[in-house]
Image (cartoon, rainbow, N blue to C red; front, top):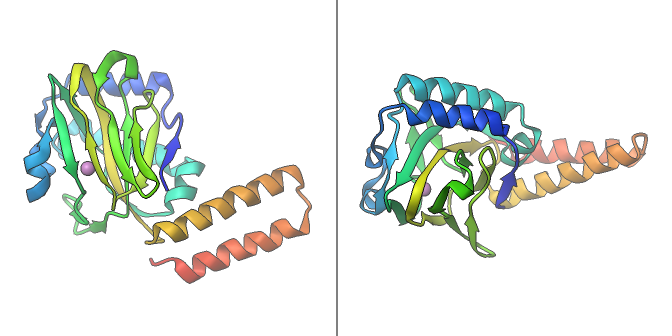
Length: 226
Ligand code: NI
């Protein structure tokens, strides 16, 4: 499942985040790349331990944990602290797949990357190129969203970022280990969740709403790993 989550940040929050990042010291993006992706990756990144990155990253995780659409779609077990990258002057990231396991710096934790997320922080009219192109099972999807909007997609997907030929593209990117490893199972749960919410909204006392909620939780019991 590839999902757009609109307005994770308001335009004002996105602008503030971008301004904070514009003033920070960027380094070569290959610091977090694996062997194969280091050859394809040409961008800039904020070091994980950078104080600005830490502050914005913590704030973003708090916001995500209150976003019902994100929580329902990702069913997160662990969220990798969001990182920040920048592409300008023709920079790009060739076709790659993200590493399966990542160490969270400063903790003993490792996460399995079930889902990848990109939160756009620059408005599309402010740069040319910079599309995130994801090879989904339904075909190739090209994603370029307004500042504050996010795309969530299976980390198993091959993807690339096309060259940024004008302006600068700043984004946050991170991974999620889900309680439900399988993308197909997560998709079923998400569809069921949406249908239950619609039913409960339109017909709050419908007995099927309770029964379907039971089915939802029983599927979580069957499929979740903690
Ligand atoms: Ni990637």
